[in-house]
Amino acid sequence: MDHPCAAPVAFHSFEPFYAANTQTRPDVMIVDLETLGQDGHLSRLAAAQPQALLMAVSAKGSLSRSLSAMEAGAHDVISIPADPVVVAEKIDRFLLQNSRAPRGQGGAARAGAAERAKPESATPYTFEGFVGGSARMRDIYDQIRRIAPSTAPVFVTGESGSGKELCAAAIHARSPRKDSAFVAINCAAIPAELMESEIFGHVRGAFTGAGEDRPGAAELADKGTLFLDEIGEMDIALQSKLLRFVQTGMIQRVGDTRQRPVDVRILCATNRDPHEEIARGRFREDLYYRLHVLPIRLPALRDRREDILPLAQTFLTRYAEQEGRKFTRLDPAAEESLLTYDWPGNVRQLENAMRQAVVLHDGELLRAQMLPGFLRGEGSAIGSPITSRDLAPVPARGRVREIEPLWAQEKRIIEQALAAFDGNIAKAAAALEISPSTIYRKRQSWSGRPEEVSGATFTSFAG
Ligand SMILES: Nc1ncnc2c1ncn2[C@@H]1O[C@H](COP(=O)(O)OP(=O)(O)OP(=O)(O)O)[C@@H](O)[C@H]1O
Image 1 (tube, rainbow, N blue to C red):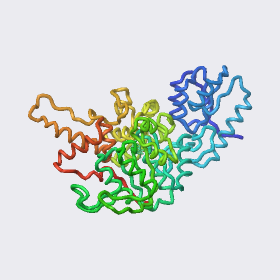
Image 2 (cartoon, helix red, strand yellow):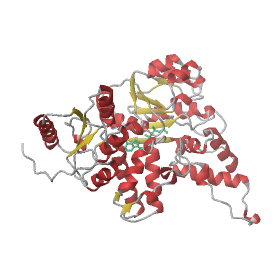
Image 3 (cartoon, rainbow, N blue to C red):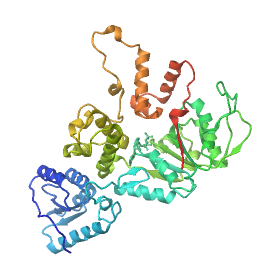
Image 4 (cartoon, rainbow, N blue to C red):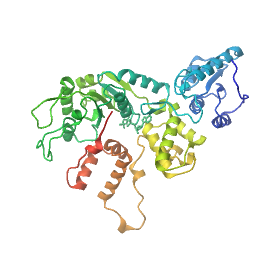
């Protein structure tokens, strides 16, 4: 097979090779494992040039080294000296597969590579709100496709910010229930004493402040999907009531004597280890086995690095549009910072980092120095994308009379954190390293009366 190829270029050290690669879109990269092919180098190349065949060559022929090179992103490892005809055939096969694969679809030797075989301007692989065509995410999309039509409960696990709620919404969107409501309730964001009413509703007079009958999340999700986020945080007493609901399909509003049938599919998520929670007596084992029928485990972003740049580009475009900025692309150094960071806060942390950079800067090219400090080795963002220190203003020296009372400072910090997380109390609390009920109590103390929390904890939409 003939290909109109540009002339091959040879490099003897990694950085010029990487730099040259980031200016062009090669079809094939051949890397000598013994000189340039450390795993870190291979994964950077694989992530930066997902469309290219990444072939490693080795004179040593070590099996374990070959496997780790493949894990790092090489499509193939060839022992040298190699038969040039065999090498040419491999290259031909790869290029043929890629040219046949429709844009955004599979077919390459390294799963997830062909769907991203695209010119620079092509849109990244997407699935129901997810961006990213790594093999591990494509496996998740397959699982979602397979389990969406069922009515069985789904148990989604994964680190914070890895996309568990997105996954639940995707299951709903692909299910026969898609034309009814998807109601998400965050079990960590609501104090235990209000949670029962949030899920099952209440009747007028059931407790102080219950001025009228109100349906809970389960009834609102009738014929649709109820997503219980952070299920591991649910009070153990309420877990018994949830178990009864799962077993019978009947709910009882708080203060009511009547049972009502509700037809919902239950999806739940946790970023804790459910087995550990069971062992500690914080999660009912019988409830766990009722809910843990179809498990999905979302991979951490650091375990699918080839998704980092497509996600970053998506967020860059999205927030540039929203904020009226000119940004269209990332410069190679910025790409490298993003690719080499470990992302403990996963996609949410990446999204926040891109948003912050877009809000604070402008230009067509987003440069490495515009990215948040933690990506440049300044400070730490481990585990929390936004910290109270990031949010708190630095008080002006010597202007004693302008010092705000402590409660007002707390209020401002908490409100800023809530705004940063679109009103999600659990996420704001995690970033501030306090418990969700502390936020709730503080809000009550500012207003002097119990506050309506539903707006901050429910997200609901129909089909
Ligand atoms: N693959 C993805 N593509 C695009 N956006 C994503 C992806 N994964 C997550 N996000 C975005 O990242 C943010 C966090 O995702 P999500 O809320 O689903 O995570 P989570 O695992 O439920 O987090 P938590 O455990 O903190 O509740 C959201 O804005 C979501 O839209």
